[in-house]
Image (cartoon, rainbow over the protein chains, first blue to last red):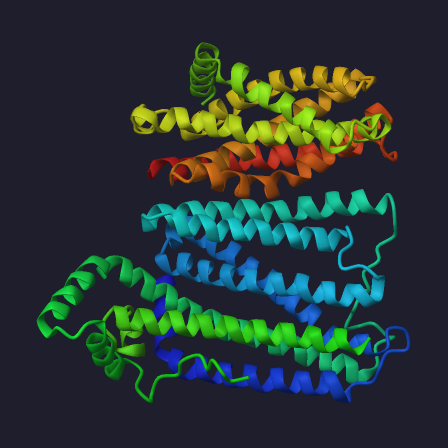
Length: 278
Length: 47
Length: 223
């Protein structure tokens, strides 16, 4: 089944990924323009409400990414669906999740400072998110130090599930811990919130779509990296030997090889992640 | 007050761009390392 | 399963009794941590008394990391790991045995630490029932989560640095709930009923014992 998914993915992948990338870029640009200039200010929060179009969508993507990692881990541990596909997809998603989780904390801090007067507060959601970041940083760490691919896949899947099971417990305990002292302080954005003006609601929806598309796009590219890494692990030694031999033969150093491979590799048909796209 | 909003957008977009760039760099480096072929190499995995 | 668990636990505890690493290194270290906290808080009596439950549980966490590392260092030396796998024992039994041995060591350690807290910080350990119940439930959760991560981390040979990173965030709720329950028992913290916190600890313990029983098979079978 996983193989089927992978095959289908590879068939439609070049076109679909590029389409998703283009959509992600366009919608992100639209979100920025709408969010920064065309949406009204909030009566209570003033200009700061514009962070609404960044912070909650980023947080949503972080949770989504970790959820995908957990789902992939289950699929990997289940003997019938076990396949390297799930392992790689889970790893790719976790890495993106860590990036978005860190961004969630950063943007939350930037929002919290003018709103609450502090960079950090021991709110249940903040604390849970911080622990989540630490948990999945551990997941990435264990992937990095394990050499054998099968063992790594199993161990990291278990780590991901254990980490994911911890999230509700952490959240509930911290919630209870803090609510003994103070009412929840986080401004609750809700799409159905009647206080949210219509342009704001639509921009928020757009922002959610934009960041989710960006996640899907990054995931597709990061998955390819995972596949190439696995290939590298398999062929690493032979390749290194071949390279050394080639170096000795041509006598012109690694530059010659790089040039030769580069001309075959990054042809015009390739769609590398545009580094300077923004 | 406004500085915070701009900072929030800037941090987010810059981080995403940097991360995307890093993924792309790793991918191109690996592509070269396994002998080029770009996307072909990727699809060959799932022939 | 239970028989295997008893065998493994008995083996581990016998090793500990003979090597005395727990008694001679881990417990003294935990006591040193208590003393260091006193330095950090400038031996402010009121402050120490107030913070005693939290300090106690932080010291327990540090010591737990050491105990778990020790518990798996024993296995990785001389190929003990492979022999354990070859012994044909139920992985769930191995998990319960190892976790049980760690739990017993931690409970003994907590006894020492509680005495240390009572003497060094002059805490009055009232409401013994709640204190003991908290220790029991929290220790089960700590030992279970620690054993899962112990086998994951030690297998890669980077356990000294990796285990704390993996384990500490996961057991953070144990620290929080156990501290709160102790505060309620000692009457130091805000308020809150100890039973509610005990329930959280119970949920944590059940989740991680179940996770360990399920996950240990796949984890052990492959190096």
